[in-house]
Length: 272
Image (cartoon, rainbow, N blue to C red; front, top):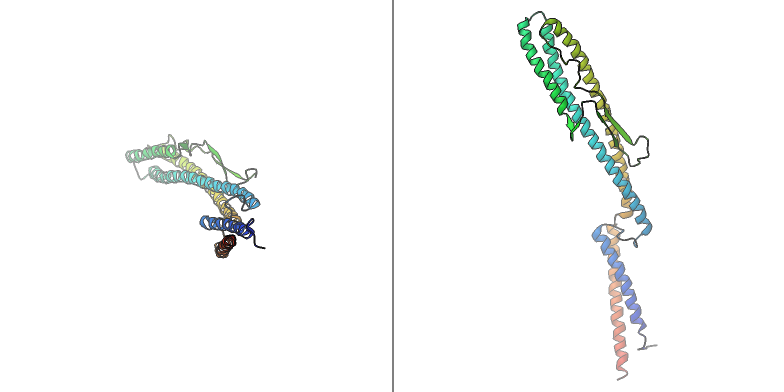
């Protein structure tokens, strides 16, 4: 029955229009942000799961940074030892020549001059091999690096301990001034070359471990990011379909409201 006291058709049309408009706003927000959850009201439980995953993801990202920093430190230390190793090889050549009976003490003096300069360069190289002012080759470096999102894991931290003091090599104080001293220098150089080789092997083993840790971290972050996408990434195709459907509903609601108001006006004319 037509009535002018309660225009129920218009009221229902407005209600449907508001509801459809809210849904359209939600769809447009998701499309513009690329996220399916833009507020807790969209999916409260999904947002809670995503937030927990985000914390884990951030922890894994930091673990990856820690691993990269550790590798950079180890590469710096290995670079310093590589330079020391090259110097030792040259010093060994000089000592071998000085130990030979084919040279005189005068010539040994010339060889010793270069030998002593190279010994000084070893000390300089050891002292200058640092990372953010931390000495790496003086035997004092000992730091742990967290490479997992689970800090309670017993293997989550890799300890980098560079315990050999390469400034205290056995060649210190040796010279090539005569054949006897040159032979003693060769013995010291053999020991020092072994010490440096052992140090580089230790560093290489640590680098390998951090490389494997990085692989685990990459896998964890990739899988976690994929899982996060299930909760957060917007399905553009589905949203586009919803937008089209809601557009039709909006047009229909607006048309219904217009017709309801028009009918009310027509009823009003009956009273004139």
